[in-house]
Image 1 (cartoon, rainbow, N blue to C red):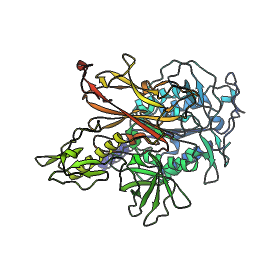
Image 2 (image 1 turned 90 degrees about the vertical axis):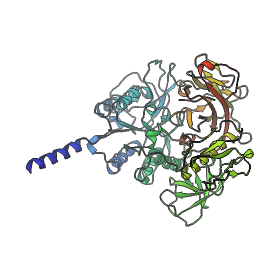
Image 3 (image 1 turned 120 degrees about the horizontal axis):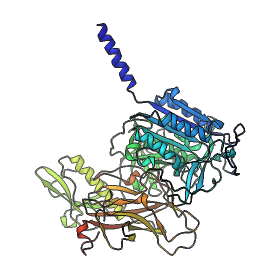
Image 4 (image 1 turned 60 degrees about the vertical axis):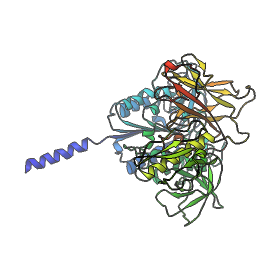
Length: 621
């Protein structure tokens, strides 16, 4: 009996030691006086105003990690104010995050303080500026820590199989992987001295599985503001802390981000945060281990509630919403809001219907429950004698198959939607055979979704200053016809719609492709709304080559695909709304003024190259 008891205790001990470790490094710098630090190198005046909220953010985040996310206090290292020198930051990353990292560990890195940009004549970024964080000994001559310098450290964490999350609250943080009312101040200073660094620092961590939350775009400022607790905080960190508090168990990080994004836009509309990461990282709970499987739920966030009762939503046409659509708070189907008008692709206005809920506030998540009717001509469908599906918004059932876009075919008790019409090009030829009426209905909903994107027209006078083109990376020539060759690599080019001249308003550009099987994938940008705002400088170039970040290889199966160029004045908080698998849809988006264009191309086997024939689009892998 004694040996059985000892064996049981040993088994428990082994199980305990097998639990993934959870480690965090939290850095917050308010004090940039460097009054107690030695000279580190040549000095150049850059401003260095002190901040007020960075150390507060470290303290409250440390408590949240312990109380909400199961971190042990001994596994949280903090560097605040003049502790956070360049050497100390790099040493702590190496010793506390990289060296002990093992498969399955949860690793969290946070920086709050000043951010800057370093002119680099050899940078691979279009603006030739590397984003950086400013250490506490910067005033004494210490060099900024550039985003590229941090890549090898973070990639080593990923190489060891750990789950890596970064939260960056400083100016220009979007490129890294923080004079207004209410005492707000920016977390950024002047450019660092220029360099010429041609070294290859490896792939971006967000492209390899890391989840990166950034407080602002690469060209913008992040701000501090006073929170409800009476203390100064980074505006994005404070919004994120409140989103962490409100998140439900198992909530995907991208939905927690929607909460924070909506709250920030409602309270600090001049700051646009972003989430970077692959779908597996976005679908895991924040600092969690297991991603939630994708579902059909469409979720949008409340931006703010107006005094007159109007509820401003980060949801619009791109979510399938229309006037009359109904939404409910996630987890509370009894309360309903009804869309009263749309403000654009991704913003709308709703009113409470019944029963009234006092819990609707900035950051509340809503799921669409009924009445999604995309704009444009309805999709025409012929059912024949069979009718295994109920009505679908945006679908018209016709009595003559010759008038239909799709007809329902039956074979041995299974059904498939088969394309009957010829316009618009790019619609899938058929859906998979199924005997499940609900799957058949979901397929029809997605066909309608694809049809609505193919028939969507830009608002009047909103045409983008640049249009879409594709470049063959082997020949360096633009594709002039409608064929693309298999096994070749292509990239995206933006071409000026008119001769360049006067300064143009910057827009965020997105490229996604819908293939002939109904799959949609982002081509550019790949992992989030960062470094996709053009033009960069004051002048408008005739051509903007997106290069490697937009490169794609043409592979089997070849077929007809349609590429879309979407431009918006505001970044999309969750560009994954532009992706879906087969005949199945996904999630969130926001903007006010926008435009869209499309090109249809055909990918062909290399042996068929340049045979004049049917024309049309590629498949990107």
